[in-house]
Image (cartoon, rainbow, N blue to C red; front, top):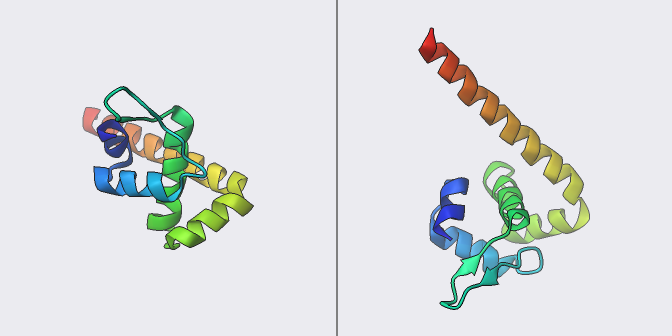
Length: 98
């Protein structure tokens, strides 16, 4: 849970809440201690939820509807945003090197 929260830049309680609210889309396994073990697909779904809620300003209910109706467009936007952030980080590294 902590690793996923760090990837998203969110606190663990938000990730836990989203996991519980969007249980139709996110199905983490649990280890013997009961800790959630997220799959890469779950992390992608959480990134999509974060995009819809934090960037698009949708409610949790609205985000669930959007994921159910038009998931491909959300996936594309999140991937594009991730690529752009990666490019930005690389450009900052190049600027520092100059």
